[in-house]
Length: 112
Length: 116
Image (cartoon, rainbow over all chains, first blue to last red; front, top):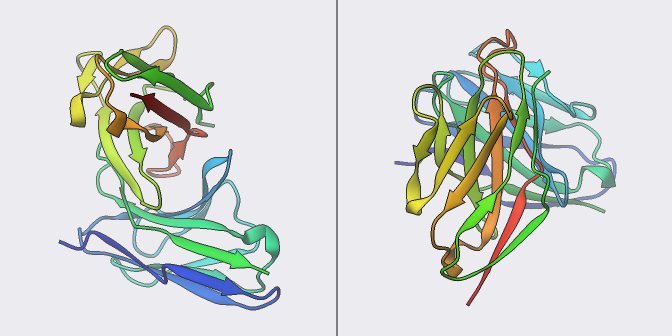
């Protein structure tokens, strides 16, 4: 039972480079999320997708784009990475609104 | 807008003593509330939730939480702390009346340190 799978686990980028973080879930969940975790800031929502075909901005969407490729996959793209985007990124998914979210193991991204 | 506050960055407790990790929330209607735990270099793990019904909810690893609507709080508790409970704890809220669809908002986290 894989749950939520994120790739890669670690990444170092140079300022200005682009990359895509991949996320897939095998629980048939409608909703998927991308969060970033920074020291002292908790988890902040970047983007979420309430269902296949829809995406919405969260608290900190600037500098990111997302794609809900299908019900299973929700990717996060950094078009031009900046040092301020150094963080740990978590993907999550959830089913009905009264159920808990399940999290991936995280991607530690460093932008130099 | 929905929000969550965890007023303590860190809570220190001796092993065997009771622990409380505080959480307050703000939503427009009746909230769905969750607690998660994060161990070093790991993702978040679900502990317990309040949806409706009994204000005291029990979860994994002996943890429980009490929903208090008048104080808009959902404090996490455990009667007897273990050293292995040392971790980062997050409270989260979902507003079922929010048309944004299932958005889940987290607090800033509280680091729990249990000393032998």
